Image (cartoon, rainbow, N blue to C red; front, side):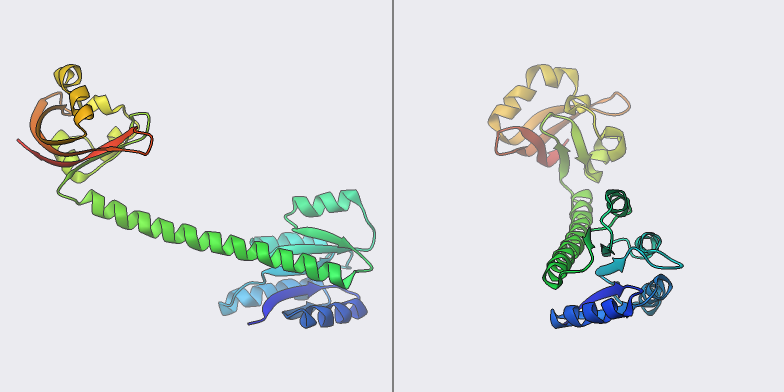
Length: 252
């Protein structure tokens, strides 16, 4: 499928030459001789539910609506569009303004066809990377929500910590046992939920064993009540040997 690109220039000769060149390079070119027509094309894509323009090549010096104003409008309508700005006069100020407005790059006229093809290709590649990253992030969010739901509803006692021993997550079984909510314990030291006697006498021994069966533990509930249980499970450690939580079952 051809890659969509929006081409905007008030010089009809340049518009025609660049359209043919980009079409030859494999792009589906949508040409507009003014900023107003260009933004209408962008909005039509949104109304029709179609895909936006991944790349837009925009002349800066145009009457009525100049390229920088058009760039701002396109970025408000289609933030991910990669804009390549064209200018007949190399101006550091104009270049900086364009980049600050979110332009991907700028080129000077007369346009070198090989150069614009290369820059358009790079812009399209960056757009594709942004879209792929967004897709992966969405998949990760779904997977995280799925795994969190499983952990949340497991009958096992689950307490996850970071490498520094601060609680990151507990599940419903642990909440029911201790009276804390997951939010209340997030960021608290792991020892917050241990009774003083257990911390002093048994916790280090449990760490050394790593995997235990019916190991006596003393938790401290939110109400300050000591909860004695027998834990069967595993101390979870990362590849460096740091504790990241424990998983198992308890019985009273």
